[in-house]
Each structure stands twice: as structure tokens, then as C-alpha cells.
Length: 443
Image (cartoon, rainbow, N blue to C red; front, side):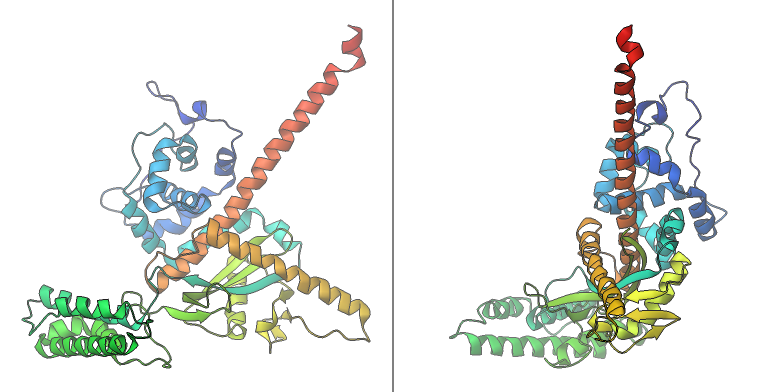
């Protein structure tokens, strides 16, 4: 059942209301009045039951998600900050100062699952609605892709095989399967030999240890397939298939599994000097030049080439922003496409000597594409996209959309802060001029 918030304008006989405590010119207080909270109420109300115990109010949950992304906090840390910060509480719709957290941190997990990818897109769309006229003033959009890394360890054959052995032992214990041997001590001894795999005198020993780990992992998987009951085997079918694939996969195989708990993770080679490979999913960014607003973000599972991602990315832009851009400015990775969904694809190319004016226009457009790189960097490091802690394919899309919304709202907070500062400076100038006016001097 949907929860309700108190009226922020209603006074209290025993407690001071937040409006009397906070600075009304604070950027969070101003932003709280600019966001259309009723839009979220209408969008997410159908996801709640009409019976049962009232849940946490929708505005509180959406506010917590935004604060988490804007200030780069975790589920637990945003709760701790919320209890201490009256501006956080006012932003989330509270009337009086609260001494306890509004919910358990795990409720944020349940709310993210409740709204899904479409709900995360609606949070991004709510920001775009506040600046739609500003976005419509341009015909261009910058598009680029990046890797969104999953929260997994760097995958090696030895690590993955040990995970398979541990998972098989865990399943056997849970289902009361009598194993011939658990290989716990053997596994530790073999892992120790793997530690010195790069030493010239230990390479053969390490290779033999890896082969032994592979043999043990395959043996335990086959043992479970034999001894588990048919209905139980059906329950663990996907897990055992992944375990079998890890045991049998070779170095140059395609569609390899890099994590047992995140099997959809892909290996993405971005050509960076400090990091050759990134393990996660590919994300397409769409940014409006000059004003640097993210108007679309689309997650792609696996590692598709950039060119096929153009059409879904442009479709996502139209869906979220309700705007159709005339030009999409991209890099050389998008070769092969000149027009997608009535949008001209602008890629850097060799200049023509017959059209100098057109060359200069195109060169300026292609130079403006570089502005998307710092937007991606700030979204990753400032809005929790550098490492994706949300589970599964749905978690990839939700994390990307919430990170984009966090980046946009953070920029709006900065803009509000500048407006308040300039207004303060302007008022000081007016007061100073009145004090130095001839009437005041003569008196």
C-alpha cells in the first residue's frame, strides 16, 4: 500500500517545522520546489497494492535515490546522512525534523526492483521536462559509448574454477548430497601453487595445478548432476550449465563466462593504456552540446559494435526526451551509417577542397563531440557508475539511468547555487549604490 507524507506547510504545536529551521535559499530547498513530485506519484502509484500496511512514501524513496546519486553515497550512507541533514529531509518531503531513518537501506533495493528500468527512465525524464525548451533550441546531439564495469573480481581461470568448486560444495550441503570428496584442502594447496605461476621455475607446476583444478571442478559438477533429484536438478539447471561452461571454456572461445554470479558480464576492450579490458556492459550516452544535459542513456548487454547501437540509442532519446534531433555527432567508431530514423549521422572524415564552408561547419561539429568525454567521466566518478553494484541485466539499465539522472540534477543544483550567489551580489550592489547616492551623502 502506498504511504503518505505530512503537509510541509502545516504547523506543529510541539515540534518546529523544517521550514522554520532551514535556509529557504539553499539549493536543495529550491530544487525541492522545482521538481514535479506529482509526476512520480502518478507514474509509480499503479505499482502499489490498495490493501495492506502503508509503505514508505513515493516522494521519500525517489528523493533518497536522487540524493544517493547526486552526492555519490551508498544505500547505508545516504540513510546516515538523511538523519543528520535537515535539507535532505526537506527535499524528501518531511514536515518536522526526524530522528530516525525513514526506512531500512534494503527498502531502496526493493523500490529499485519495483520501478525497474522504465521507472529509472521516468526519473531521468522528470529532469528533462524542467529544461525541455532549452534542449529544443539545439538540433544536435552527441552520442558515444562507454563500458559500465560490474562489481566482480578480475576473472582468471583459477579463480573461476575455485568458485565452481565452492558453489558445488554449497549446493551439496544445502540438498544433503553425500559427496565422495569436497577437495577443500586440495583446493587450497593447488591455489598456493597458482600464486607463483609467473615465476620461470614454477610455470609447469602452476599449469599442472590449473589442470587439476579443472578436473576437480568438472568431477563435482558431474557428481551433482548424477545424485540430485530430478525436480531439484531442474531448480539448479542454469547454475550447473554455467559451471559446466566455465570448466570447458578455452582461451579463444566467444561468449565466455567471466563471473558465476553475473554470467551476463562481457569483456570489453577499450584500448586504454592503464586498463586493457573492462568487464561489464556497454552503455550509450546522448548529450546535448554546450548545456551538457544527458537526454538519453541505453544499456547494451554483451559487447556490440558501436554502429548497431545507434538506432536503439536514438529511439531511447525520442522516448525519454520526446525530442527528435536533426544531427547526431559521433566518432569514427560509428562508420557505415549516414542516416538513422531521419537523423543525420555526422562522423569525422577527410575534408573536401570544393566545399570550404561546409568543411568548417563539419569540423566545428566534430570538434564539439569531445564534450561528451568529460560528461561520461563525471557520471562515472561522481554519480556511482564507475562500478555497478546492482545485480543482473535489469541492474545494468537501472544503474545507468539513475547515474544519468544524478548527473543532470547535480548540474541543476550547481546552476541554482550560482543563481542565488549572483542574486546576492546584485542585492549588495544595489544596497551599496543606495548608500552612496547624493541624497544619502547630503543628509
